[in-house]
Amino acid sequence: MASPYIELEVGERTVKVTNPDKVYFPGIGATKRELVEYYVSVGDGALRALRDRPTNLKRHPDGVQTEAIYQKRMPPRHPDWLQSVTVTFPSGRTARSLCVTEVAAIAYGANLGTIDFHPWQVRASDVEHPDELRIDLDPQPGLGFDAARRAAFLTREVLGELGMTGFVKTSGNRGIHILVRIEPRWDFVEVRHAGIALARAVEARDPDLVTTAWWKEERGERVFVDYNQNARDRTVVSAYSVRARPDALVSAPLTWDELTDADPRDFDIRTVPARFAEVGDPHESIDDRAHSIEPLLRLYAGDDRGDMPYPPNYPKMPGEPKRVQPSKARSDT
Image 1 (cartoon, rainbow, N blue to C red):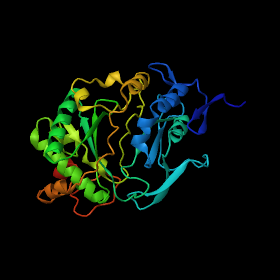
Image 2 (cartoon, one colour):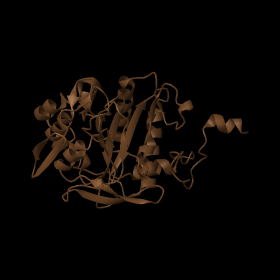
Image 3 (cartoon, rainbow, N blue to C red):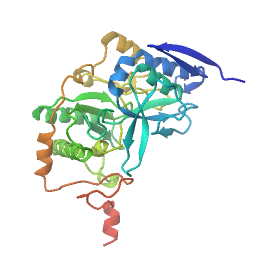
Image 4 (cartoon, rainbow, N blue to C red):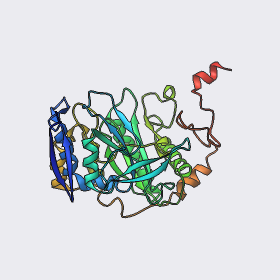
């Protein structure tokens, strides 16, 4: 018997939503239909975060209580109007990836069970030169959102001194993401070096609060600045993405004033549409200016510590230190 479905009009497209009454978020009883309708209701903001970007899909076709399918390639069967772009992975292999060009593409992804969308930091017009620097503030075990908040304001100070503007959002959990639009003139390696320089500058402001230590055993109860989110094929969830949690929290864009007393639990699949209708998108001006990363590259070049480890699935990179956690390195000597 055919699965039940409804059809939604999304712009010029008709998007089919199968099994619309399936509960996806058991903590609040939210259904698949609510997920798709959520993305349509915040469509302008969600599209601003995803527009023309290769996008990975984190799918939970049976709801968040089931294991995720992390899909980096374009679904083999898809509507003719859906766009794609070729990307190159760290291994050198290539693939066609979903390229989001309209709100209907987001709704289509949500119907596939995509809870959160993971865009690359490049646009389809130039997939080798990022146009976004990403700062991922990750509180380590024992810390909560307030620690990430304090680290975010330190980051804003550093960015301001460099003449750069960062746009802040909740991660949808305990962390915070700050996005900086940059000129697409530098490759992934250079942008990652800029991210390392920025992370070190923030760490220097308060090393008891912030760490750049890649190895977990060295981080302690501090906020880790994950500089590797600027490496090729590393992604953070997009603004307005729902997170795969029973309570359906959202990665919510904020103003810096709002961050002062924001609680990430206030932003979920049911509260964010009303907020969006009332106040609009706090990131509306994110594309108005693109910054140079030359100041950060000068900081990196002047730091004799050099490069830092890449994630384990990457090929060995030029100038990279040993990719061995310190305790194991000591035991081998």
